[in-house]
Amino acid sequence: MSASAHSLSRPASDASVKNDLVKIVGVHKYFGDHHVLNGIDMTVKQGEVAVLIGPSGSGKSTLLRCINHLETISAGRIRVNDELIGYKEKDGKLHELHLKDIARQRRNIGMVFQRFNLFGHKTVLENIIEAPVQVKGQDRVPAKRRAQELLDRVGLAHRASYYPAQLSGGQQQRVAIARALAMDPELMLFDEPTSALDPELVGDVLDVMKDLAKSGMTMIVVTHEIGFAREVGDTLTFMDGGVVIESGNPREVIATPQHERTKGFLSKVL
Ligand SMILES: Nc1ncnc2c1ncn2[C@@H]1O[C@H](COP(=O)(O)OP(=O)(O)OP(=O)(O)O)[C@@H](O)[C@H]1O
Image (cartoon, rainbow, N blue to C red; front, side):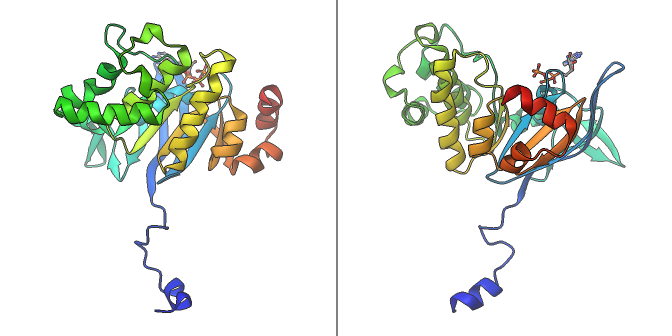
């Protein structure tokens, strides 16, 4: 088949056609009468990096936590790979899934928080193999081999036998990323992964995230690192008051924000 004929007849399943991995439709979240998310719509395609920015209290963390059902949603639907997260739908109503199904869904969604939350009494290697061995039932030998590969990937192959307290904050955060990757997630959520770090440690963590993005990992990243958003993000979404104010190509949103609230926020963080 000639090249032109091939391009004309490209099948819908062509690997270059990106599928929607995350679909968030009309999501609301109330804590009592405090409306934190007020109808969020967002789509993230397979392999994309979606960066979320917004002022403190705008609902960014809550949205991330809803995506892996650490928070229940008050209305709307969140789907990852076409599977409804946290619920099954019957007669138009949502019923919360059993814990084992919620746990299965969470295994597919890695999450890295602002604070690294490593087990202090376990070595770096033991931290990384904990979930694959305990949750997935993997044998320790292949789990250790994979953990060592992941440590190599985050530049910490030589720290496998250290305890978290012997590492810098940036190194601990890279271990936290390796630990999340050990479950082979399809989606990674990052909630301000560098904001608790000393400035000189931020770059190494962002480099690991850039490498992950290059490898095709689908990522949703809450961050104030606008340079990262510009360089790595496929989309940049500005949230305020629990709604999406604007979303688009990061370079365009940063250079020519369409809304006063986005402009005001960017002027403070740029
Ligand atoms: N469990 C909870 N109970 C009650 N209110 C909550 C709870 N979790 C979050 N909130 C409130 O929801 C609002 C949004 O919080 P959230 O952490 O999602 O914002 P954010 O945009 O991530 O802010 P920051 O940048 O400061 O982390 C805040 O007013 C917060 O107090």
